[in-house]
Image (cartoon, rainbow, N blue to C red; front, side, top):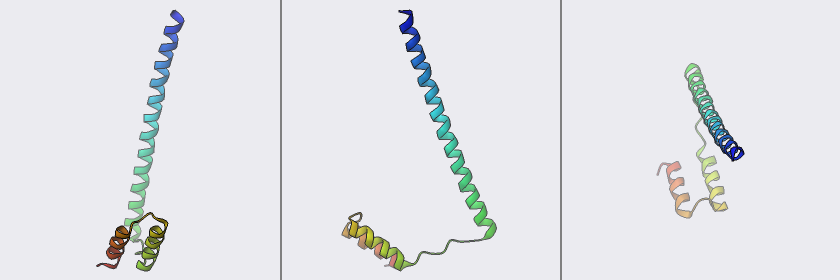
Length: 87
């Protein structure tokens, strides 16, 4: 009986350690993403660079590919195209 208790305790401790490791990993990942976002915002502010506007023809072509693959319905395609064209 003493052996079973040790196994159970070890299982609980291992689960707690694994849970803590997962939480630490997720927090680290969020922190790194926040730092990357801050860096991107800072570099854009410093250079004054604004990403170029996408060409409407390219956007509509992309929508057409999505529509033909079945990712967009007819109504979704029409609505997205009207939005791009400013209608």
